[in-house]
Amino acid sequence: MPFHWLAILLAALAGFVVGGLWYGPLFGKAWMKARGITPESAAKANMPLIFGATFVLNLVAAFMLDHLYATYDAPPGLHHSLVIAAIIGVGFIATSIGVNYLFSRQPRVLFLIDAGYWITIYLVMGAILGLLR
Image (cartoon, rainbow, N blue to C red; front, side, top):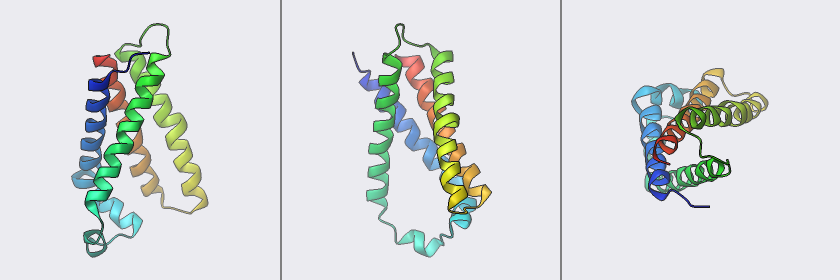
């Protein structure tokens, strides 16, 4: 089963970029408020470790998504790649986050930001893998 390393790498990079935009200019302030993170506490974070680990985790996610696509008899095109990615993002990731956030009594806005991020990142990764496979 061949792996599509360039597509995997680009999907992981795209996920990293989406995260930077999502938790930066798009929803960064609302996310920090919902999480109770102040600019002062955020400045104390080990950002090289966080960014490095985030990229590795995105790489694993992109690799696994590519591997899933490779299990089909015929590689899925863009449409089916997006459908599969949406099923993962909405059906597995968002629902799992939702259960955790309900029991930990997290604010709804935090769920919407975080679940929206994961749905978006999987759709972006799915699009890249669907186009470059």
